[in-house]
Image 1: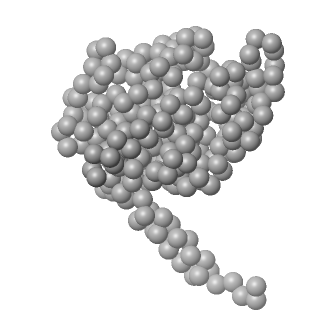
Image 2: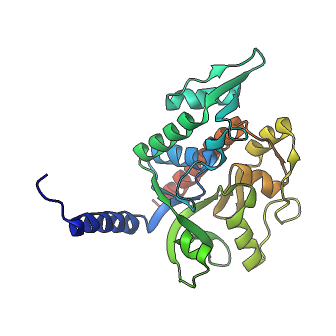
Amino acid sequence: MKTLDDIIVSRAIIEKFMERFRDNLDIDVAICGGGPAGMLAAYYLAEFGHKVALFERKLSVGGGMWGGGMMFNFIVVQEDAVPILKELGITPEPYSEDGYFTACSIRTMATLTAKATEAGATIFNAMTVEDVVWDGKRVGGVVVNWSAAQVAGLHIDPLTIRAKYVVDATGHDTDVLKTLVRKNGVKLSTPTGNILGEQSMFALSGEKDVVRNTMEVYPGIFVAGMAANATFGGHRMGPIFGGMLLSGKKVSEEIHNCLIKQKSLNR
């Protein structure tokens, strides 16, 4: 390279990003949160052939998986989740005869991110979902803004993404679902109609809860990962991640079936 023009560099970045953003204004699925459940859901939905975009408010995706347990960067998964990791090209090591397996948290999250983007999922980092599109009966998309603008408290109007389905995978905080309930007073498919909040640590129950609680909780919006347990009052489970992976797979399969059914009805 004989010369390097700063303006060409800037133009390339701006044009390519705007092309990507414009191409994702009308999508099949918007996933809010790039932790393991959200990222795996993006991977499978893209593999199914659906147009999916994931919005992560931090610079990096991965949620709590990067840190393993208390920054010891290994995770534990149970036997049920091992086939998912193997499908991604990761072979976890058996730790005991009781069905515990370990995997490097860094490699696992990096591989999952690569696989999701290779499958066709689009990731928007440093972008927060501050609201949903709601017509009084159903969620029909998300409202996004720059995370930095939110942190700085800047009054900047957001932009809208239309989506057939939305996944709240924002973790313990259930940010998207809380906004839907707070602003519109809607009733969810929980025992009380409200977000119940997560219970304290109990890994055995939490791992079962997170899969069972992964579902459509209001027309057009699903919950997955820790957001599912926080919504339905399930336990937290710490640095065992099999349930997160199984939750991501389950939500992708349920949404895939919904999208297939919609397409058949529209024919």
